[in-house]
Length: 264
Image 1: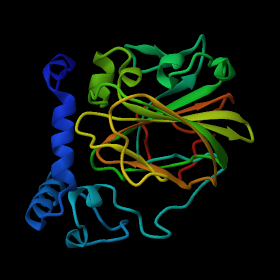
Image 2 (image 1 turned 180 degrees about the horizontal axis):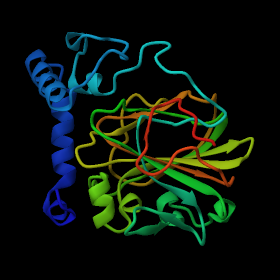
Image 3 (image 1 turned 90 degrees about the horizontal axis):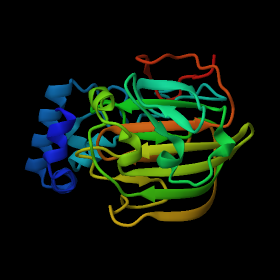
């Protein structure tokens, strides 16, 4: 769908309505949604903790399914936070981050921060989660979470086509900005919402953020490399921002899996 058509749609209303259906524990509704989704996207439940469709009480329960123990190996000290496709990566120069071949955007806008000087000369990587991907997000390095900011915003699709068409896409959409301290300096992990995303839910909350006011919170939580941080209740994007200049082992267009090493 083109960015122009997306601008015309009531994206928040559609997303919340889909969210209500996705959370429904009515057996007929959940079974229908799950069956259609598996048929359309050819979902393989071999890695899932629950391998039968009937084991899930709602579509959201299915969509945010956990992996079975041992399904992935965590290859630290820097691993992929999610399954998906590398959309962009590179250095941060003049507060600028690459969105696509067509567009860049300001790091300050993405992080909803006045001062991003600590990341100048550092690195970023953007990973797009398609609907068929595993949709839990993990911390890519051993780190201490010290603050979060939930930023309400738009809900444009974040697929590669829209990223090519729409300037400032990731800085316009709803997102959760998580700020960490690591052994190599500060790091930010941004979970970006998208069209039909029913919510962004971190591990410390029992429900997704409500799309209202911007909320900032002081935190003190330590995560090991590969520990779960949160989940998307539909598809979206994760952006990592580092103070460190990293030589990545992946390139734009590469498919990555959670736990895979990102460092060359």
